Image 1: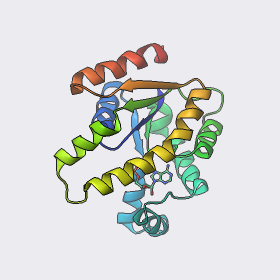
Image 2: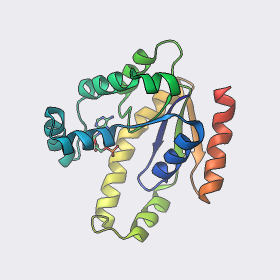
Image 3: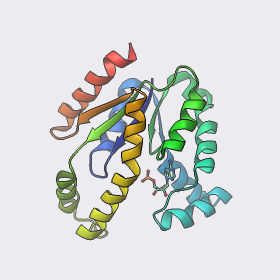
Length: 185
Ligand code: AMP
C-alpha cells in the first residue's frame, strides 16, 4: 500500500493516520516529524530546516525530495508500504514522488476533508496558547494556498479520494477503509 494523506490542521489527520498505519501495517512517514527529529539531533539538515520552519516556510523541494527518496528506499518501506504525511507539499514534489515510485505509482491520495469553520472551532476548543483566531486563520490560508494545486495534481493523475472527516472517529475511519479497500485490491 502506497498512500498519501492530506488534511487541514484539526482535521483529525494525525489520529486517522495512526489508525491506518496500525490497521494496514504500513510505515508512517511524516516529513514534519523527520525534520523535527533532525532539528532535535542538531544535524546540518536540522540546522538549515529550523530557520525555514521557524519562518513558516517550506524546505526547498530538492532537499525534501532527497530525504523522501532515501526513506522510501529503506527495506521496511519497500516491504510494508507507506502512508506519507506532509509530503508532497508542492506539485514539483508530487512529480518527484512519481519518479521515485516509477510505474506502479501511488495507490491513493486521501483528502481528509473538514470545512474551515469546523476545524477552526475544533482548534479554538482545544484552547492552546498559540491558537489565536488570527494565527489559526493564517495557518489555514497558507494550507489552502499550498494544497489547492496539489489536489489538482492528484485529481489529474486519477488518485484523489476525498473523504468526509466530520463525525465520530470510528465512522470516519470506516469511510477511509471503505475508500481504500477497493483501491488496494
Ligand atoms: P508539518 O508537521 O507537516 O506541518 O511540517 C512542519 C514544517 O516542516 C512545515 O511548516 C515545513 O516548514 C516543513 N516541511 C514538512 N514537510 C515538508 C515538505 N514536504 N516540503 C517542505 N517543507 C516541509
